Length: 115
Length: 113
Figure (spheres, each protein chain N blue to C red):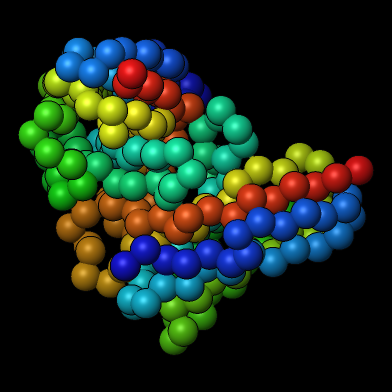
């Protein structure tokens, strides 16, 4: 069974530019999450999709971040315009269910560097 | 709200044991443990649920004290492959509508030959 995949693995952009990150969850997983880890700090939640609906977007830092999951399959996270503080590793995770008993499987992450 | 992990870092020799702790100020539904190696995806190790149920790898053991909102991960007879950063993620009581995990700051474990 294929795991969670993310593209690209690395992205280096200049401040003010736009970047779009993609996540393909494990097949059949209705729940998809985005997390971010800024260097040296903890992994922080950004948002949670159930199928194509946003269940919880309480962790989205501001309106420069836009997440979509059209059709309930893959998801994209767009940052526009990017700022220096957006640098970090963006992880996607997926799970079969959303209750506390379901494990979340993480992708390898996209390392975003804003210069 | 963020759980606190201790220690922040630990260095072991192969075959030695270690305990990593995760402490929350809130009542929890569950504690999730992950290990991440540099540049790789965090790998699921174990879930410990309120009520005593556990799910995870057979070779990993952990405990969850619901009254104290504390969990401990036990690494015994450590191998070189155990090296990495260990994270606990928690689901606080009252968060049933979201799958959001709140992570600790991580514990770096290095196992030397």
